[in-house]
Length: 463
Image (tube, rainbow, N blue to C red; front, side, top):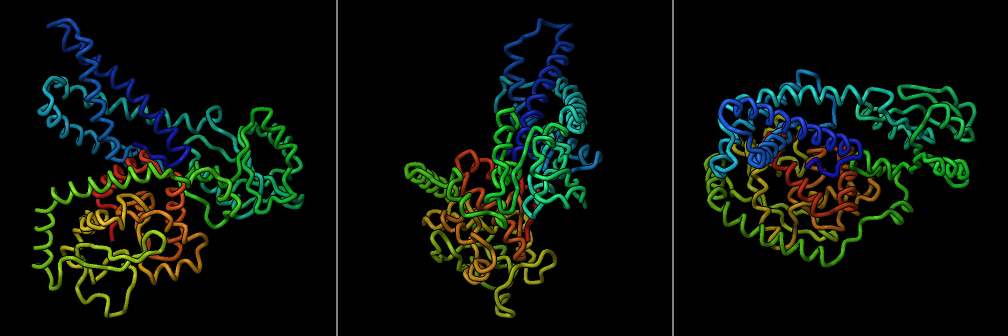
């Protein structure tokens, strides 16, 4: 559920969830023991079954309450509010679950006692984990081989994740006059020729090779000795990908793409995916037809023009198709100034109903027809308009590579980055799109769909 987003996020997520599971089972055992002491003997099999259901709902609520959102630091108050929101969601969901499955029902008096205890234990557990992440004994010391743009980008990502177990102890420059230089990042501690000394002195457990040009300049023998001593050595693009859940497009070498694993998808897997998407799109269209009809009526009542909006988009292999959406702008919005990205806030072209549809992502529902026709998938890079593609492919390296898979209704870039309205945003989104293309799998698709539902419920990132 935590998606295949990043090395640090995934590791911490698993640690948090496993610890929570143990603590919550102990809490349930405690409250059940107190309640059963006066009446009957403890029924352990029943307790395990009820606990499994209870923990599933609680973890689901914590996920959708964004308690596990580890991509940015939060204040203590913010974490407290997220936890409270999650427990409230669990309190609302559990009666529904118990109505559907009475055998796993937890008595109301136990539930009332359990939820506050669970909240306190989760708060203490998370505080301990993040406190431990700041302790040097539990921190992974990282040396970065290089001082250029790639090295600086990597250091910025590692520093942002410092509470999650990473500590950049310094850079290794290629020239002696670089030693001691520092800005906002850690200093250049020595030259690349002193790699073994730096590893020993700073107790590094990881060396990341981030030289902008490593041809003939790589200390191969010293790196080999590091590997033999049990110290991890990774190249910057691979480590950056695992750390952040995106590719380092601006500094990516073609040779890395050629030799890096991934990208190849067996035909049987692609055929099975297409068949499953066809069936799912058909079922969803049948189920959602009444809703689509109601939304179309509201659009027509709110403004003049057709309810369904067609827009030319670039799909797989560069083939242009008509993308279908519920209209969210005035019918005459584009002739005024030609095609343009929607602004972040207050775009006057958006109608009142359209603003709600965009916030909840309901304007994308007609794209189920695009999925039926094979023009789109449920998950993939979002398709752009032809004139935007022509503009971006000239300035962003590897931009056309995103057209090697069918575009999606939702995608990795949508749930990790959100909406983009500039060329810089498009480049950052491409980093996520290429990561998805390289690592696409059923599990990653499920994670993206779960994140998409969360984004829809919270109304995040809409334009």
